[in-house]
Length: 330
Image (cartoon, rainbow, N blue to C red; front, top):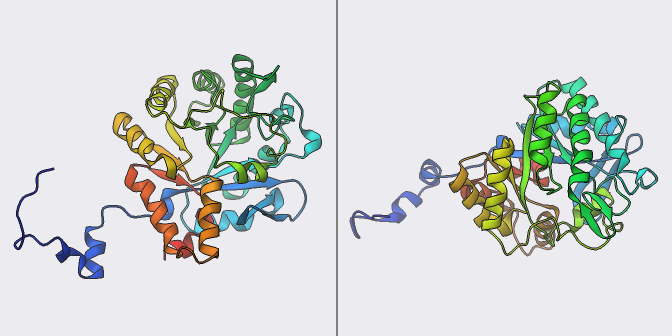
């Protein structure tokens, strides 16, 4: 960077003196359009269950989605993401419930589309961990996650979600080659306009614990996910994953988690110029929320943290705080 001018002619503090001036020259801002709202689903009627490790975040029964969707639309949030807490009795080693056209996600898609049409987009997670008895994202055989066999199931799961009305298919499983196979199947069946958001850069992180509680897979998980999720010491490996998924047909790229991987968001954006989403994951939310509730940090820390994703290059942020934008953005 070339600096022209010098003190006292150049005074950087001049533009910071008044609030109107600070707003005028601000490089990055936040609006409702920068967010995706994750919603957890549960069985039952008129249910709204708070998640113990995520204060202020709830599971909703399908019949009780209207209020949270209404808030999202009022706050100009363009898309919601659906994550099911599948009844333990419906879980098996193959994640069969993922292919049930009457599962929680399918029922929620139909409910939202019938009421809201295209006034809000729907993103659907493609992975088997909410449905498997072992808690893994793919098929398990003798402690190994099977790649190609899992893809065959993910293709069927993606097609079902598209048939139900899902707008954005979001494979989070991290199997090699699944983006191309899913794209091929969607196109073959007339869903060429359904978008794919690839969790191309998903790290084997310690920040997922509260989410796993929310979807009911935490106590079920056998071992860890390090053989398919990325090593958190690696950046270039992530760029290779992105390049492969773009070539296979990904429309957008996810970096997950968010805050510990700000450098990765910037690298993906600079290298590929593709829409990038950051996921402020459950552990990030809970850390920040607990610090604010215990008066260690001020409420403004939420805005500061969310803005860092935009500054790093993210086009949008998946955040549980998207349900509280009326407070955060005021």
